Length: 114
Image (cartoon, rainbow, N blue to C red; front, side, top):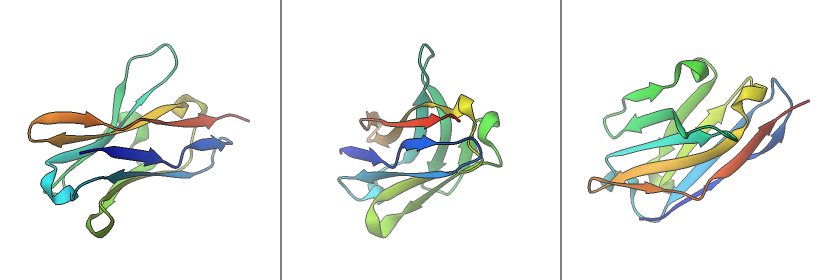
């Protein structure tokens, strides 16, 4: 499977962005999908994950602001990001577990600054 992320950009604090991650295969076949991010000089960290059973897991720093969802018909995973803060600046990667193997998209840059 291949993952193609998009939707990043530059936004002012308090703004919103919606990231998309299109899979090359039906996402019914993928056990878990999620978003991770890596800020400059920092390790990659979990943002939010969504299982096929509908369970979500989010980093404490994004609870109440970021929302993960998927569209099975479009084979797409989304991340709605609201009330963005400068500390959300990072490259965001989508991830999926395909037959027990992690697969990563290419990343999309989100910059939050005034």
